[in-house]
Image 1 (cartoon, rainbow, N blue to C red):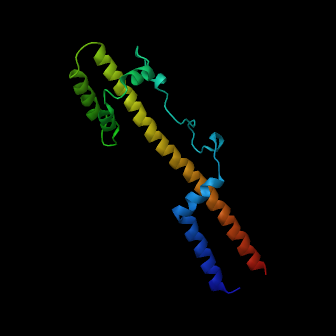
Image 2 (cartoon, helix red, strand yellow):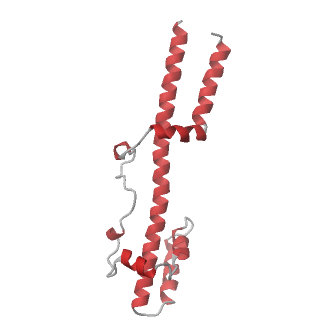
Image 3 (cartoon, rainbow, N blue to C red):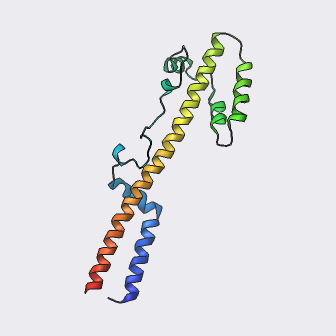
Amino acid sequence: MPVGWRVWSVAATVFVLVTPAFAQQQEERYHLTEADWPCHGRYRLEFDAGAYWRGPEDLQALQASANGTVDVRPLAEDLFAPQTGLEAGTPMIADFASALPVGPERNQRLALLFAAVMKEANLYRKFVLEGIVGLVARHRIAADELAKVEAEYARMASS
């Protein structure tokens, strides 16, 4: 087999390996589980609001009863934006809280804000976890394809 064909074959394989569309199609071959998690921390799809919430309200019941009548999502999105740090976020929450009337409604809206921030955090976490799992799958695909190319190259070299 001519050397030029071998170089072209290796180059084409490398191109296919780095093409995201190919990798995304091939990721379905790998069904990754918690055991495949490459990080030191535990694989956890979502933060549990109960681990952070010590308020009197049941957050799920409160969200269901509000049923969209109180929209704190824009503030939650602003608080969770990458450019919003603790220094900027704390006054935003304080301004929101000070604009609310004192009483049960204030507590409910602050609880709804907490729930909305947790939802934003979990959406971002899901995005990051999917990226890590996809990367692991693409690395496995690339390793399999590279092993095939190496085997073919060794077969061609020995003949």
